[in-house]
Amino acid sequence: MPLFALVLAGLAIGFERLLEWQFGAAGVFGFVLLSVGVKAKNIPCSCIGAAVLTMLFV
Image 1 (cartoon, one colour):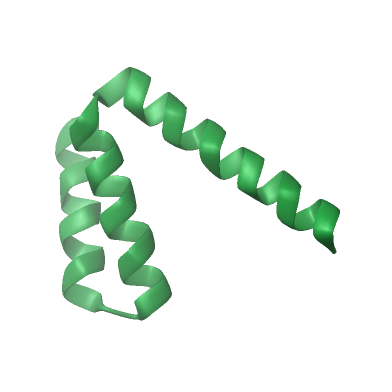
Image 2: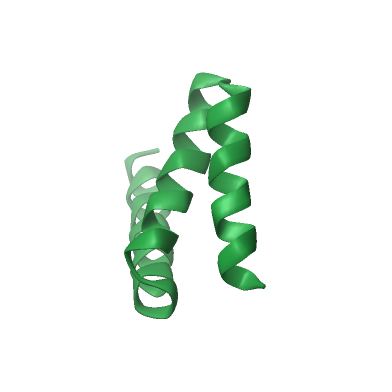
């Protein structure tokens, strides 16, 4: 179980670094909003994060 959590944390950090490298601070901000919204089951926060990431991808 601790190995799984460590691997998952490593993947999350790697994905965050990729977003920061590719899209800058706005990408990290959108990813954080999306992940916090999903964890807290807060629909407006999730939607704003998804919209920020979508605008960056387009």
